[in-house]
Length: 313
Image 1 (cartoon, rainbow, N blue to C red):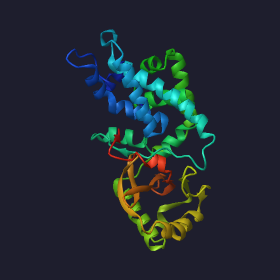
Image 2 (tube, rainbow, N blue to C red):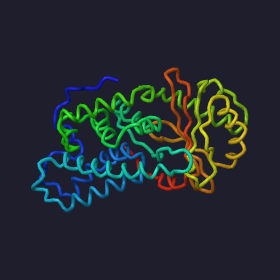
Image 3 (spheres, helix red, strand yellow):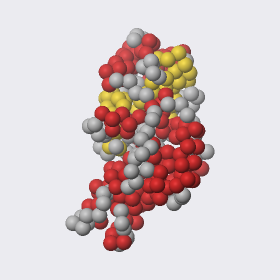
Image 4 (cartoon, one colour):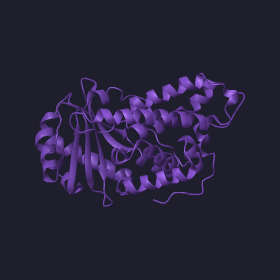
């Protein structure tokens, strides 16, 4: 995907705006909060940790003399990015001991109304894209996101990361090379996503493959994250084993769950509840032939506990 390399400096004024003497510190921050949460979530892959990063930024902001801040948007973006990077370094260390497969924390998503904005932001929230970012170091991840997704200029990214502009360019270039495949940027039409959800539900409820069999890639993978706290497949299932698992196992285990389709991580997904409690989420990745390449199931209750009304942009 080609990005605009001539974006003007100061583009992260969108994160808080230029100085407005009529606004209080709290009002300035609240205007910036949705964008800061979006940046922090994409860096961390965890909504709970992203909210912590934003809250820490808020506390620092309250202690700041606004008269000394030339650009509130730049200040807030820089502070939140630094806090998220520090938290990501700690998270990487803790994931070494994670039980089973690690998946990003699912989130409800709210995307802007403009078509281009919707496309850009939706793919960057997908589980597949966030997993791809795991290949990067914390600073590479932050630089890549700020430049590629949030469209800051190299000068602004460099300022946010406290580095020179040439060094920032090298960091982004290295991140692009490590990320590589653009396939995870692809999303099918909403109609195709709805067709998949209907076929997925039918296959599990009836125990028969039906239309779902034709919608899965031959090398489809199923990854489940139970965090060692609930039962979940510990191995990544591949190929024919995926459909067999869905129709033979999940057909029995999920029979009593209440299903609801919703916006998850920038696309149509599935939430499963039992006695009113969220017990699982399901999201998907597709190839350019609109076939499902990955099925992601999150069962870890710690990652589902906060799946409420808060949306990530």
